[in-house]
Length: 261
Ligand code: ADP
Ligand code: MG
Image (cartoon, protein in one colour):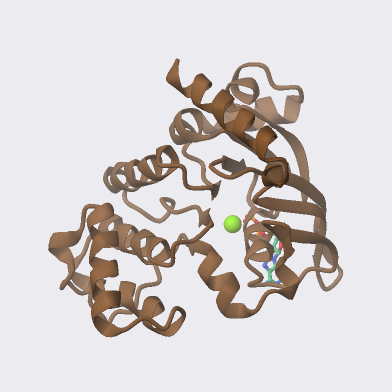
């Protein structure tokens, strides 16, 4: 279908452009421990622009820690992480915050600020935008997640799904090159999960590069370009979702997916 031919065109373009074939994200032999406890035992993978990687794995396998290494919320002891060829260790905080957005499980909006103010805050502080420009940009992002009409609502007046969509709008406002999602729907009531996944699917289809920890396998099947199964700090298996679902190489992958679906 059209998807396959789009991919062909994209890779042909990349080949012609030569240097443009550099991955957007390169994680190289990433190792991380907390004290004596080794959490990541040599994680390596590349993510190209427009890729959507879904990460699954048991609780404690290191999924959150890996995301937190990528945007340097935590230090790591070994390996390297490159964003568009540039080591994240060498980047200044503001650059990294702007270029890599994150959406968390616990929706951490400021309670005393409206939806709109929650989105403008980063634009003013991290990007140094003027009041009016920030307001306009923030409204566009709220519109993108279907919440323009709730701009002046406070978090307490919003549903969990709406709050999480404000969180996504806040991340999008920075024009990030990469968006990280850490179980963005896990804390939501079941009936609110769909609206958040729909926004994420739209982003994926719009070409956003995303690294998504989620147990929502419907999303993985529909939106992921690749699925990664992490266990005990190692990548057990990684490939197109249909391959891991229908023809996994490892028993552990099959067993884990069986429990999820
Ligand atoms: P997951 O997201 O896959 O459930 P985590 O990355 O949260 O896994 O945790 C991996 C391991 O690291 C767990 O054993 C956890 O207890 C440990 N861990 C996570 N964060 C910390 C921390 N701040 N201090 C100490 N240990 C931590
Ligand atoms: Mg986690």
